[in-house]
Length: 408
Ligand code: GLV
Ligand code: MN
Ligand code: MN
Picture 1 (cartoon, rainbow, N blue to C red):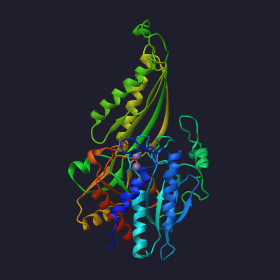
Picture 2 (cartoon, rainbow, N blue to C red):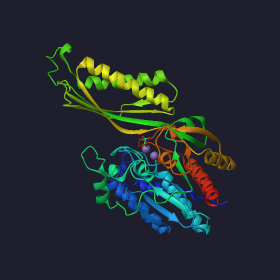
Picture 3 (cartoon, rainbow, N blue to C red):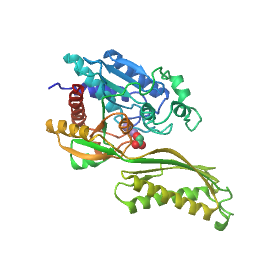
Picture 4 (spheres, rainbow, N blue to C red):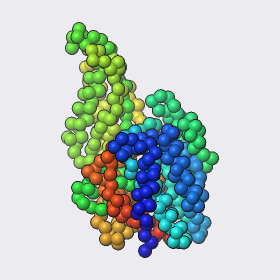
């Protein structure tokens, strides 16, 4: 059996993590920033050195292709290398670099495959700077148009199109020009289950639905000492009440329902002034679409009730909305089969986080492989996965890809 060189994979992860490194061992490479460009340049350099044919498409997705013996649709892997502002070093990066390590191992062993092997780096998976998240893969599968994606702007009004051009990644290729035979994404779990249960490989069957909304509340600012409570039109109060409400709602609904107010800005944000403006986000997720809709409706009802009582205006803007995704059953079985054949312990599970794979499932049979995240920490500089687990996941990916690459 062809074996991967784990130390090289770990070395590549270290090298990429040194770009945009932040205190505590994490990374800040927000999409399409100078740090993202430097990370991309490093990865593209590695792709070239491996002899891959590299293309960049008009949303900045990078694909490195290793030729097969036949001119068939490639077997594709990959992920993203952008991070949240306080990100770890494995989220996304692991999947991309494991893909490159697989190519390196095939090259060194002189192995040819029937189908080409492709490694993709998708633009702006995180959605922390530009929404929606999974933007590159969403455009790749035709989920939104190029113009809409290019027009997405960050909080300072800078657009995706302008930033792609500025960092030199507005490529000539048409997104989605290559339709893979299959797509398999390797990723850290980013949650606690595998670590708690001491299971080595998560066989991912689905990705939960995601609903992101930004609310802008307008009230009236006034003196904190002189304004009686009955006269207040406090935008901050509504934001706070939503935060409490979604927490209670998630507990009450139970199951997979989670809810987060992750971003909140008050204006004027001063100790002795009633806020006249609040801008905050609500992130709701559930594996069950009907329940996710129910959660959305209950949040909306709560907001209109409080807005009426507080006499504030609320505007809602949907930033991202994706239904739950079920991966290809046969491919999920193959992931489980190859993990077990390596004597690794496995568990079937849904993904709590969003992934490029959930978009790719619209285009071709898709599955994911998870490895444990220590203490379930992710989107945190302390995100960590043990070296042995990183190695095991990459070996499962290699074995799955080799089987797929020999299929007719
Ligand atoms: C994106 O990675 C998300 O799940 O928030
Ligand atoms: Mn990720
Ligand atoms: Mn992430």
